[in-house]
Length: 67
Image (cartoon, rainbow, N blue to C red):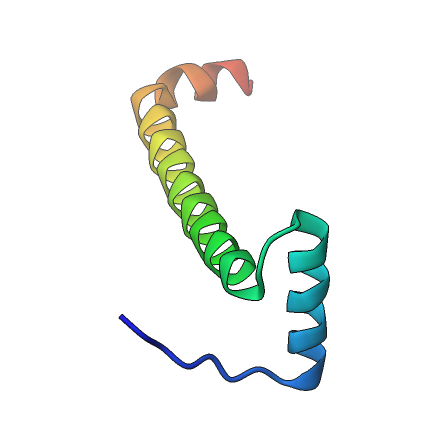
């Protein structure tokens, strides 16, 4: 699906720099950045879920260790 991405001059310069660093086109750099951001977000959410689950599961133990 085609999409137009409107960037400020500063954002465009950053994208050009990223593309140059990666040795890819601006489009590929943008796609990689989007996928990487989505992956990081999903990972953070999963870690938060697992942390909450572990805190609930071991609440008594954690309370005793805190004394």
